[in-house]
Image (cartoon, rainbow, N blue to C red):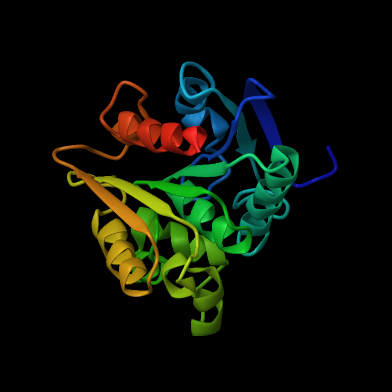
Amino acid sequence: MSEAWSAQRLGDADAPLFCVFVHGGFWRQRYTAAEIQLLAAACASGEPRASVWNIEYPRVGMAGGGWPGTARAVADALAAAIRESAGRPVAIVGHSAGGHLALWAAGEHPVALAVSLAGVCNLRAAVEARLGDGAAVAFFGGEPDDRTLAAADPIARLPLRSPSLLIHGDADDTVPVSQSTAYHAAAVAAGDSCELHLLRGAGHFEVVDPRGRAWPIVRARLRALSAG
């Protein structure tokens, strides 16, 4: 396709719910949509019935990757999903850096639910902590200034004005749980509907395992959307 993004389409195209999945990998080229494939497939099967897009987008090291191209590509994919949904509720689900992208895209195009799984929700803190061996700095192509951070950082763009769900393991040693707790506190203070679940003892990848504790929480929220 001519767009910067692409989508693996799963599930029932006529289902009452539309879900977009955004993989993580610290915005780096070597990580692909396969990272969240099992969760997307779980969403496409069982209940609630859902039409699922598992999207791919340009990443650091690729043409158009980094800020702002990566975020714009995900937002464009979400906009296309909203158009295709034809009024059905749309949810966007992102893991790790995909959590950042899901929340950012939902800020551009309101959705029925934005889900961040172990997400990088606070880019300023990620830059300052050199999270992921400097991944956030690399995402910006160098040290970002305050104006750039304000445009790119989900926590700086609150209120989101779409309901959000954050799930994070308190034993995550890849993206610290403080990323989600800080976002949740700021979102609630800004008047957003934002729900936070902390999973005791969970690491970074349990949240994208359909056999783990995060998926039943997400599926229950999706079922509520589907029920209308």
